[in-house]
Amino acid sequence: MTQASIPIGAFENSFARLPDGFFQRLNPTPVSQPVLLAFNDDLAKELGLQTATLSQQDLAAIFAGNVVPSGAEPLAAVYAGHQFGNFAPQLGDGRAILIGEVRDRAGRLRDLQLKGSGPTLYSRRGDGRAALGPVLREYLISEAMHAMGIPTTRALAAVLTGEQVLREGYRPGAVMTRVAASHIRVGSFQYFAARDDWAGIRTLADYVIKRHYPEALYAESPALALLQGVIERQAKLIARWMMVGFIHGVMNTDNMTLSGETIDFGPCAFMDAYDPKTVFSSIDQFGRYAYGRQPGIAQWNLARLAEALVPLIDPDEAKAVELASAAISDFAPIYHEAWLAGMRAKLGLLTEDEDDRALIGDFLDGLERTSTDFTLAFRRLADTLDGNKAGAFPALVKHDALLTDWLAHYQARCARDQLAPSDRAAAMRQVNPIYIPRNHQVEAALAAAVEVGDLGPFNRLHAILAAPYEEVAGREAYAEPAGPSEQVFQTFCGT
Ligand code: AMP
Ligand code: MG
Image 1 (cartoon, rainbow, N blue to C red):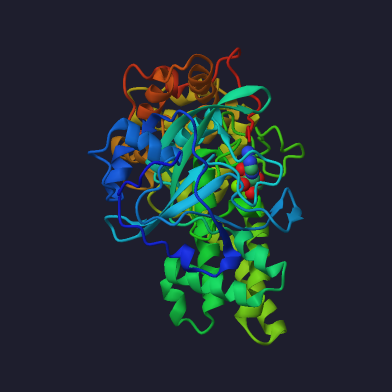
Image 2: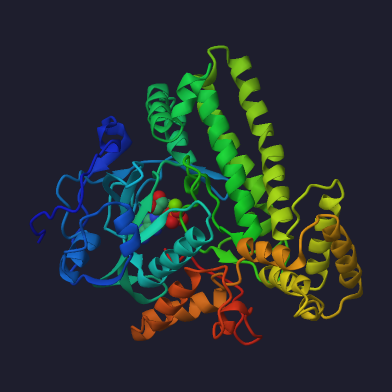
């Protein structure tokens, strides 16, 4: 029983204006008893939504999919993708529905998408639904990424459906509302390329250029400029992930956006002890998407985008391939520059010194050898520079001899920068989070919500992660890695 429409904003539906082969038009499947669990008022304001005067019931009805807001033209988009290296020629929004786009206060077009909103043409054998745990997980982690200043899709709402979904057992069902610059993925281009549908690729490229890379329109080859733009944004994005120990977990080509936002938070997790081989996802048996492999995988995914764009880059195929290959090769230097700048900032280094790369390498080697917590290492280093907690970093690394030597080198390097130690420490605290979504805290928050309906731990964790850089007394438990009995070794997508 779909209720009457409610106005919440001026929908533009530009994606819905694309040709028929891009999507299935359909409304979300209503749920029996929607209850609003979380709503992001700040984001609603940023989007200029008229939700402030709506009742909890109306909000729940809208963000469960029971009521389609006035002016929206819902659809499920089609795409393809390489999943763990294997090409699936047809995927798509199997449990998501794009409600439409609204223009935010800054004039940018933003997608509103419901996830867990019922079956579509692209559901394959899935039920089109989402379980509460993964919905709250995406809510928490995407908002934490945003609070750290990392480009990401956002969480607008989480609604309990009143229905059960069958996963490893029955679980409470939920619908998540996600906000994105757009939901166009590398796999969106692959879908048309796999069908030799060059008109489709051209239409999609024109759309993406207009929406995300308007400057590319004036380039000699707009398609090449588009590819270069995506490569640059993705290289910088992955560098940001690496700075905070974020492990996406499912870097399939259908989970990589053209906009440069992080998307599809499945079994993602944050690394605790520094080790490039770290993997949490239960489905990543061979470590394809391990922490240290993310830059290489991103480049591989972008090469799949390049292949799809080749026919648009130049009428001369050999020349087009050469240009696309050069663009892909540029990923590495762009990434490394972003990585190095990020690491210098994390270590509080203002100037550039040719030995910095080695200094950073020795530091990371030391963290790996001593299984030191990646996040705390930088904060304790700042505390040590400050002077009043000079023993903080040596204590964290258990007075490891090599790292003690390293500390002396580092302090000598800092001395060449002409910056007061307290100012350097303050600058470091602005780029090194003290609170990240630690796996054991996330799991505990989800378990309380799913098992006993207690949203207290979720709300507390969400509030703490909203201010990740400022250390606050009383929040020590959220800064520390898991104790031996709390450790989480695996995460699940739960789809
Ligand atoms: P993901 O691993 O979540 O990125 O999803 C990969 C593909 O599987 C996408 O096309 C999803 O729409 C689809 N999918 C995942 N879970 C479900 C589900 N419960 N029902 C239908 N389709 C799903
Ligand atoms: Mg996905």
